[in-house]
Every structure is written in structure tokens, then in C-alpha cells.
Length: 215
Ligand code: B12
Image 1 (cartoon, protein in one colour):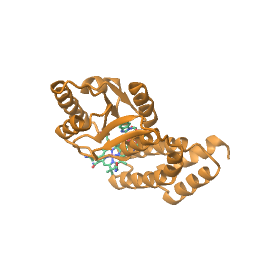
Image 2 (spheres, rainbow, N blue to C red):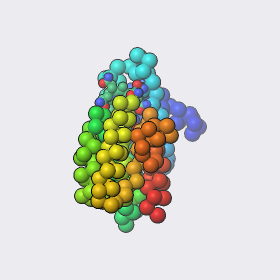
Image 3 (tube, protein in one colour):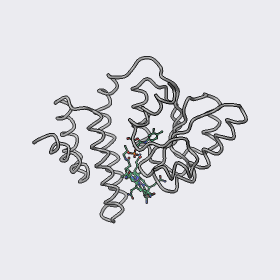
Image 4 (cartoon, rainbow, N blue to C red):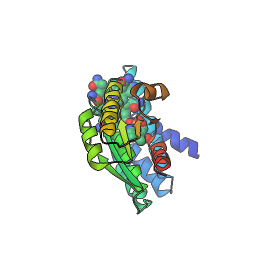
């Protein structure tokens, strides 16, 4: 099978929630020295397609849970390789979390892991984080960048509130925290609506953006 075929097979197997086959394919690609980020990207596409099946009523929440579990296992396999490519010196501090009302954390964890691989110190507040908690932690740890994650439409409102509270606190303490939002449903319009400085749709763009902001 050629490279495109191997990639398509992984995407389809994830879409079909074939856990064992997905893990075998990932192991085979790792053994063949495939680019670990490419494997993650393919699984990301599989997850996007699982989401579409859910939207079309073909999958239920159990399908979402299963896909999340498979993705977590894939990350477990790929992580040691990414970690071995990690930079030693600290590139800056990023405060992250999934906003209030949203419990999706696979993408946030992925972004945090990649940032750490590229030398950033990540302070992760977890999921369902209230705006005041983001603000209090930002004042305490003085991050170079604040990253908010949100996957569901209703998280836009929580992002907006979080940005607003962060801005108010930053002004009080004469600080500035560039705010980056991340998640599959985001675009420029959402970014403007919530008042964030930047938005990204994948973790690697987040790493490059943080590098630019800190440089
Ligand atoms: C797995 C999954 C779940 C799992 C989550 C498990 C977990 N621990 O995270 C579970 C089953 C819990 C779940 C629950 C729900 N889900 Co869900 N879920 C998904 C699914 C299939 C995949 C998400 C995922 O993990 N993708 C893989 C990761 C790697 O991608 P990612 O999150 O986009 O992250 C990447 C980038 O966005 C970026 N990134 C993300 N955050 C950040 C932050 C920063 C700072 C940076 C730099 C980058 C960054 O980096 C990542 C890597 O590149 C999506 C489908 C989709 N299209 O995304 C639906 C989806 C997000 N879910 C959806 C829904 C509706 C729900 C539920 C409401 C279902 C229900 N009826 O209960 C609940 C919501 C519960 C809540 N309050 O949060 C909808 C949202 C639709 C909408 N318009 O709001 C989606 C889009 C499915 C769909 N198409 O309908 N879900």
C-alpha cells in the first residue's frame, strides 16, 4: 500500500472505531519511522469524521467516548517519540485549560504535550474551568500566553467571559496576557466574538504561534 493508502486506512479504521486495528497500524507506522505528528493528524481527521457520524445520528455518545479512548491510546504510543525530540531549555510559560461548561480535553492535552516538547512550561488547569480561576492563576503565575480550549458551540460564551475577566485583571495589575483560543469549531469570526487575540485549529499552529509571540 502506498503512503496515501496507509493514511486513509488509519482514518477509516478510527472512524469505524476498530480499536485493535488502529493501534496495530500506528505501531506499524512508528516502526517504519513515520512522522509522529502525521499519525496524530490522521487520527485527528478520523475523530472529525466520527463527530460527523454523531451529527448525522449514526453514532451516539458511546461512539464519541470510544473514539476519545482510541485517540488517547494512540497518543500514549506516539508520546515517547515526541518527548524524545523535546527541547531542554524553557521557551516560555503557557497557562491552559478548557473553558467552563466544556469537558473535552483530548485536544487541549495534545496541545499541552506538544508545547512541552518544544520547551514550554505548561500550567494546565484542566477542564470546565471558571473564568475567575483562569484570571486568578494568570495573576499568580504570569504566563507569557493564555490558551483557552473549547469544542462545543456553547463554550464560545464561556471563552468570551474568560477573556473579559482576564483583560480586567490584567489591567488592574498592569499586565498583558495574549489570549489564544483553540478547538475544532473555531474560526476568525468566533475569535473576534470572544475577544481573543488569536485562534488556532491545530496544536502545531499553536506551538508556532506561541514561539512567535514569545520571540
Ligand atoms: C471525543 C469527543 C467527545 C468526548 C470527549 C472526551 C475527552 N476527554 O475530551 C465526550 C464523549 C466526553 C464528548 C462529549 C460531548 N460532545 Co463531543 N466530541 C468528541 C469528538 C468526536 C472528538 C473531539 C476530539 O477529541 N478531537 C481530537 C482532538 C485532538 O482535536 P481537537 O479537540 O480539535 O484539538 C486539536 C485542535 O483543535 C487544537 N486545540 C484544541 N484546544 C486547544 C487549545 C489551545 C490553547 C491550542 C493552542 C490548541 C488547541 O489542538 C488539537 C490537536 O491539533 C468531537 C468531533 C470533532 N469534530 O471534534 C465531538 C464534538 C466536539 N462533541 C460534540 C458534542 C455535541 C458533545 C456533547 C454535547 C454530546 C452530548 N450530548 O452529551 C458532549 C459535551 C459535554 C461537555 N459539556 O463538554 C459536538 C459539538 C457540536 C457543537 N456545535 O457544539 C462535536 C463537534 C461532534 C459533532 N460533530 O456533533 N465528546
